[in-house]
Length: 147
Image (cartoon, rainbow, N blue to C red; front, side):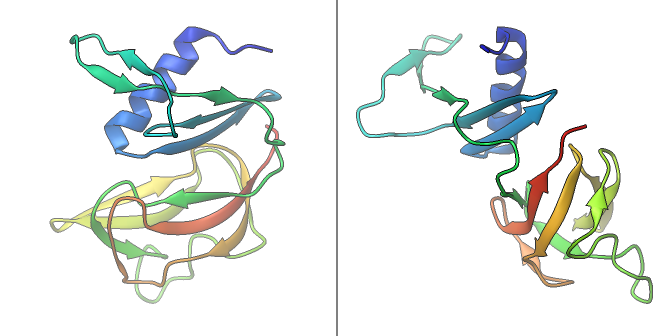
């Protein structure tokens, strides 16, 4: 099944906005894997402003149950729980619903509760509470679940 261009455009825009180079997306049995950047002699697609942008190959060969990594979207301080004496939002083995809190990211004294973008099972928590993280820092290994 070929994904619609509207979905691809939205996913590519999200990748660009977050500064990430790889994205796995699954929904309703459809799986999309996007990789941005130099891939050998990959062709360059023209961007809307007339400059060249890296091509984004799309493959559907990765099974929907494959593990993936959730990475930090920006610089900040990573917190596993809502308060120092509170239990963590998630721990390995937990089943997480879309929209459920995963962690808190503190950026410039502002606390942002980051939620799951898709249903998944937490395989591992890769960052330690109060770690300073930067874009692309692996935070969790998860197994996406069908909704």
